[in-house]
Length: 224
Image (cartoon, rainbow, N blue to C red; front, side):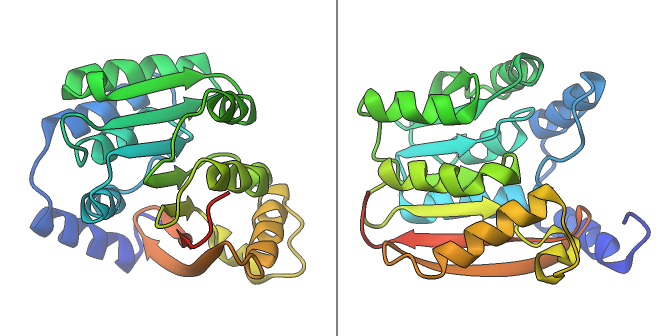
């Protein structure tokens, strides 16, 4: 996708609207050196997450899928000094890289990485009475989008915003002939959330340096 015109537009917009940031650059480099897959959000999407958290005046954020902590840094920076972000990561290698990136960025004290399968961690959070979270970002395996979203609702309040990433899957979401498990998982969630009275949802398709995809945004109207 790097040779497509929308990638050049992403570069233009990021160069124009985002300040140089050594900590974020170092996080991406550490992720590459650590052998993590290059599936972090694009810089301008990271800034969007930051602005959403700031716009909500959020004090608590839940992230499902840490990877190298790139999106974590963007969101944690939007929190007040007393704010808290809990991020869930299944792989120890990813969590280790992320912890180093958070410390380098100077926001590690605001972030707790919980290691283990996200569904287990979400259950533990609920049992511990965590939340309600003001903002939730779901960016993990798409097969489990439905249970991730259900747990996120249990950990939310009226007014919580939940963003679900990678919902378009290069257009596969609308192709009935695509049987990829991640596409099917996302398609199942979208079909069900459409009739879920606890949330008001929209989805946007995007093109850019990360290719053709999109995200959904849900506003919680009925907690639990």
